[in-house]
Image 1 (cartoon, rainbow over the protein chains, first blue to last red):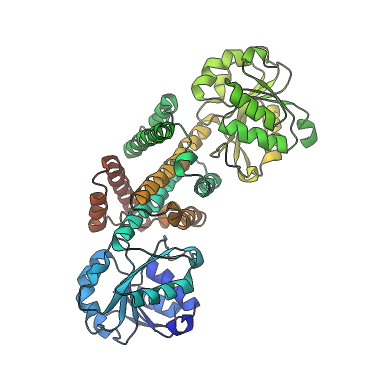
Image 2 (cartoon, chains in turn red, yellow):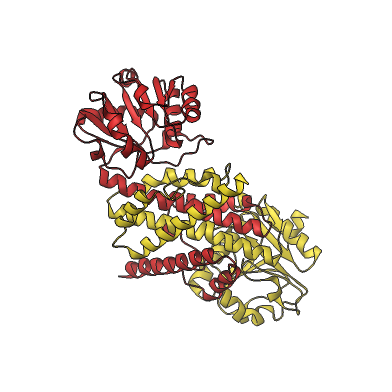
Length: 271
Length: 271
C-alpha cells in the first residue's frame, strides 16, 4: 500500500512554512508533487522548483486532476478561497493542515476530505526531522483515514487519530509550549543584549529545561524564585525591569501564576 | 595546578538542588568534600553520604579548617547566617552560588572570597552534564579568580568571568528562559490533560523550539497566530480558556507582547 499511495499525485495549495517543509519531506520520500499554488509568484515558484512541480498563482489555472490536495493557507484565506478550492475537485481527497479549523469546514459537497496536522513549528530556513513529528489525522471515512495514515507513516513514526476538538486543544497547547516559550527566549535575549552578554550563554539552560520534561513532569521540574515566591529576589528583578513596563507585567503575572500553580500541586499531593 | 587545586578540601554550606548537583560533580572529579552543612539532618546526611563527607546541622560545629567553602543557601538564609559563616574562616576561600546576590555581600573581613555561579536548572532527581554548564566567576583578587577558574574548568568547558551586575542580568534572563518556559510547559500539560491527550505529544515540538534558537534568533524563529495577530484564531483560543481566567490573562498578555515585539523587529529591519 505504501508504494501505491505514492502514485496518488499531490497538489499543494499554499506555500508557507508548513507547506514548504511538508512538500519537501514528501518529495524526498518520493511522492510526486504535481503543482504548487500560492498567491505570489515568488513563493509559488520557490517551493515548486524545490519539489519538481509546476507553479500556479491563480486558482482558476490549478489542475483538477484526481489527486491529494493539501491546503495549507492562513485561516482567513482558507475560508475565502474554499468555494474555488472545492469546485471541480469533488472526487479528489482534500485535506487542510490547520490545528484550529474543524474538519466540518469542508462542507457536504466533497466525498473525500480530512485534516492532516503535523504538530511542529516550521521555518523556511531551518530543516526539521519529520520522523519525529507527530501527525494528527481526521478523515471523512475509515478508508480516507487509512490513506492519510499510510501517507503520514511514510513521513513519520508518530501518527495519531484526533478529532477536531482534540486538535483544537493540541493547537492551543502548542501556542503555550512553542510560541510563548519562544517569546520568553526573545525577552531573555533582549535582556542579555542590554548587558552585553551573548544569548549563547543561555543555550545549555534552554536545552536542559526542555530535556527535563522528558523525565519529570513540568511541576516537578520547576525551580527559581517564583516557586516559593522569594520576595527579595522577585523585587530585585522587578526593579531591574523598571524601564520595561511590559516585561515587568509579564514577570509579575507569570511569577504569581507559578506560585499559585506550584502551591496547588503541593497541596494536592499532600491530600 | 589542576592536581594541586583538588588538594584544597571543599565544604558545602547548604544541600539544596544546586549544592547537591555541584557537590556530586566535584566528588566524581576527585575533589575532596570534607563536610556538608544543612539545617535539616535529612538533607545534610543525604548529600554527605553521596560524597563521602561528614554531615553537620549546626554551623557552630562546622570545621574552620582552611578550605574552599561553597555557600549555596536561599538568599534570605545566606544573609541571616553570614556572620556565623564568616567567623573563624577569615583566611579560607568563601564563595556563594547565587545569581542575584552581589559579591560585596562578603563584606570586608575576609581576604579570599568570590562567586561561583553555574547557570543551570537543577533537580535532585535528574542528573545534568556539567561539561556543558557555563560557570560565571567573580573573585576578590586575580589569584582567587584563577583558583576558581581552575576549579570550574575541572568540571566544565565553559568558564567565564562576570561581575555582579552581569550575573544579576544572567539570573533574570534565566528566569525567563527557564522558569517561565517551564511554566508554559506546565500550562500546556494541564490543557492536554483536560482533553485526555498525553503531554508526550508535545515533546518533539518542545525540543524543536529549543533547537531552533541554536541557529535562528528567537525573533526569526517565532511562528503562530500572535505574530500577525490572527484575531480569528486568538478569539477561538480565548474562548477555549473561558473557565481558566488566569490562563486567559496570560494568553492575552503574551499574544499582545509577541505581536508588538515581532512588529517592532520587522519595522527595525526595514529601516
